[in-house]
Image (cartoon, rainbow, N blue to C red; front, top):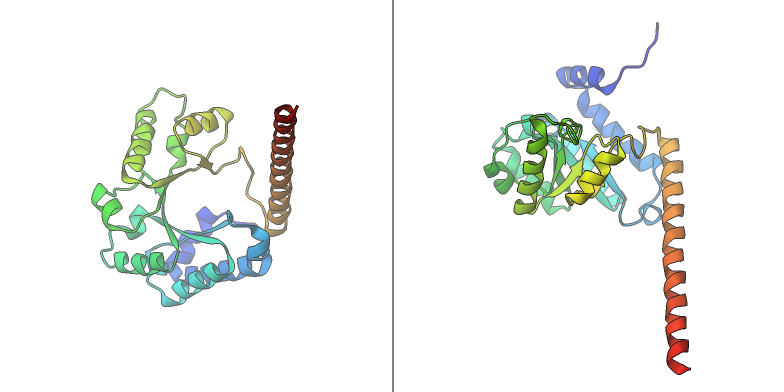
Amino acid sequence: MKARLGPAYFIPEAERDGSILELSIKQIDNAIRDLPSKEDLGSDFKLSLNANGYLLFSQKYRQAVLKAASYFPKVTLELTERDVLNEAESRQQLLLLSEQGIEIAIDDFGTGYSGLQYLQQFPIDLLKIDQSFVASIGLANLQAPVLDAIIDMANKLGKKLIAEGVETATQQHYLTEKGVYIHQGWLYSKPLKGGDFINFFNEINKHDCQQENGIEHNRKQNSHSSTSKHYS
């Protein structure tokens, strides 16, 4: 009997037996093989990689991350508070990666136990708001004020934010009003296989280009209209 296992099932087992290293490197190799070139992707494209403390201390994995950085416009390494921030030695490894242009993100922020000293001492660029806080938007529960506190703290510390698990227009609107403009979630797309993602990505690029051309066309029309009035 064959069945597909979700990441929540096979990743913990892969971490226990050490096969997570080869799986993670294979993931990077597949991204390099399957995704378009840096020129075709555009400067806004970002490849995000989930890692843990075990991977961070592997030279083989760090070399694979740096290899990815040579293929893609931006590469982000996502680490959890639990896996990394309790390791004093991890700061040096993160500094080395940061110096090579790798963006460092804290995944599921707010669910661990990192303090302000970690956010100030570690080269953290980005905080990913855990989906449990996003789900609290519009609800009268204890997590709702925590979300606002996370956003305020990130702004004061100069950290970028990504909201995970955005599924409704209400959540999208609330986050945007709060200044959180980068979202992940099923409101935008469900998880996609490589080929489906490329098609999805190309459609987005096509739509963006059409919008930009429309804006430029309107700008030229407005400029022409103003000039005509001026010389009349």
